[in-house]
Length: 252
Image (cartoon, rainbow, N blue to C red; front, side, top):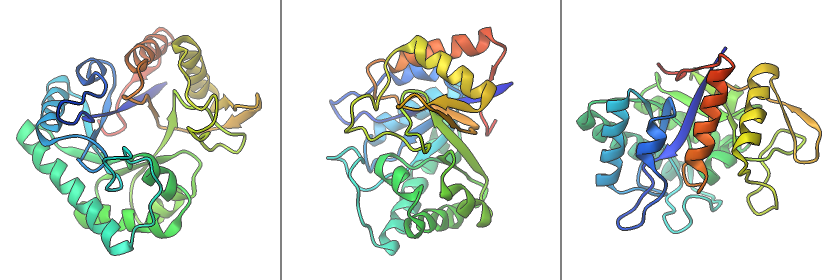
């Protein structure tokens, strides 16, 4: 058995610090690096990319709506021409910084509201798909496991990586529970580790109402902005290694 662990990194901005990138890069196998639209400044992003290169961690572009104030978590109805260009711009910026850091961008993972919107909104989904294909059709797309986006992207010729979330609760339908609802974000590292071990073994997790929901995933995300992120990721990796689950990037 094997599984990819990924985390959202490079999200500090100026004097504002978000997460512990250095610690997370010693644990995860893939790093979703901010591109400056929802978080991150150029110098900080470059530092994260250099650390990822030194650690042998695979890098992806964490593209988002242009929303620094809302950390990319506000829904936006962006015109197609703007959304396509914005995603192209972000991937290109990260590619340049990655080249300077001695690494390459191997995949794209949308962030926050953009991620959730394109999981089901076909128009915006096809805009993001078009942007990725315009830059490099060899880039993989990380998408919410079980979402319609997976089929749309595969039909367009992209490699798609289905993703589950270690620190988020699921609805009985397999969607993420809104962050506005109680219990949406999980914090117990041991419980999360056992939950994700079940996911790897059985392809299932317990939904917020106690029912079982089927989830087939190639990658598991631990959000880097959580205060418990490093402890959760470390315990998750420890349990996987104890049970013989290899931590390997899908793009390695």
